Image (cartoon, rainbow, N blue to C red; front, side):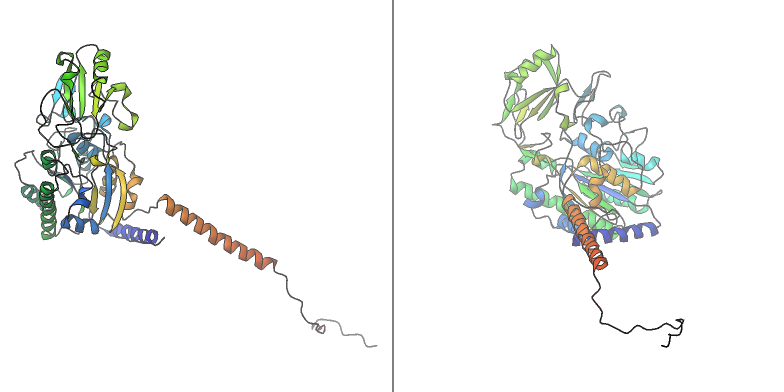
Length: 452
């Protein structure tokens, strides 16, 4: 009950503060690729922990299937499942257009135009400029628009250089930058190389990531931006351990002349060259650690069926297993697996004027991040798959409650109402006690008494 009163009071205060403010809300969205949720518990990350204590934390974010980089980064900024926004994998093939997409060939707007990301909406609705430091898709003319300020993707640009650019744009650009994104490739790259269970090597890279957060924090403070800008730190997916002992070798099951492999492990997209049913039946018998789906049979919970870029047959490896044609394994960690797996889940932390302080939430979906960001920026969102109410408890200007607390409040109110009702009824029905005999008093307007 006390926590509810605190949230309610802080919400009222935030609403009042927001109504008297004379500047537009501003938001910086940061992604550290492949930051698995439980890294927060495994490693000491003082800068990130300080950030969380001053804001909010969602311990596990359920990301979109497939749990890969390009699809989930686009889900975060559109609020759409992959079947809806069209970036359905890191490698894609469009049979109608006969075009191929990869992370090294991603600049054609054709692939991105099935959705409108928040940086475009922010500028179209006259909310100020958008800026980006290498977030996937931000260097592409989506809906004929890029962020007004952006860095073309180049992995050799250091994190510090990216931060310097973003902070400079936030500090002095004209028009004012109200929305910005920042992307960094770690700890994903090291997670692939060492595997998430290699605590010695992963500790080093996560300490480096934590120092990056400290660098970003200090830069924002140095320019007087820290107390005025809302910051979200999150990721696209987690990471699972894999090994050479857990290989699903397709060449043992089916000839390569029967199919083309469009996207690779652990969710592989298969384009049959021969009869689809024949290819499907051969793959079904291949390995017990791999699920094989015809496109129309893909489970509803994946939201991964209704797009022409999703291939006729989809292979989904069990956690830790790797689908190969016949090559050796060059990595010890991977992602892309079933999005219900905790190992695939990232986290979300946020702080700033729009957020509560010291609040923690167990879960949310990454499609919910988009409507929350639109609310903070005062934007009318595009159609999306998110649910704003799932994020209300994070926000200082929203009142929220969970089911147990709501039940407690209702029961408490009912008991109070019942008690007052009983008191009133008892008071009305109380019988007056007998009074002692008293002589009849004559009224002033009574007739004179008869004298006998």
